Image (cartoon, rainbow over the protein chains, first blue to last red):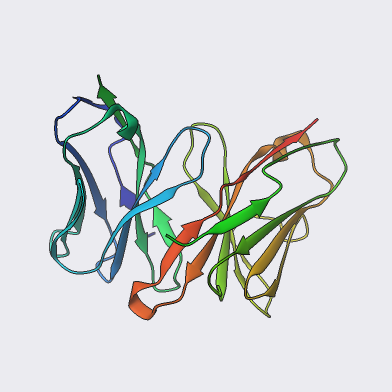
Length: 110
Length: 117
């Protein structure tokens, strides 16, 4: 059973702080990793994709991948109240399906 | 990012009727589309994988005769909930894969909220 694990939260951070969201996965052969943001009542929105070990930065977001540890994370710098949402980690399997974690709820306090 | 549309965005129907939901990729051709269902405060549940020109592949526990999927073209997939019942009320979301080899990316439609009375 391929699994993607996330802490459900909520993770509460003050405005302007760095939010760190973590995810582990079980399938060592996975090659593609994604972070989606989902606001309440809305569908998921792609934030970042990462395929190689190391860091990938896009604006205030940085994705980090460590395939040896089977660990992927998302850092959000200068967190804003509008970043409050559920963040879904997803790993693509060999049949091109996305295996989703249960999501981490982030609350950014003004 | 890529644009995927869904229609309708919400629908209310009576028990026993059928409802069709359309999913379109607007700016790319999607060889593969996926259909998900999400109940309140739960994560996405994959229902089926839809490939253009072939039969959909359903996940375990999803009734293929109840949830009919048609992937008529590279830009359109439809999900028909047949003989809907109140327990089918949920948020249905499609996604389309922009093909790019290893860097294929799934983009989600805005979702369709189904309420069965």
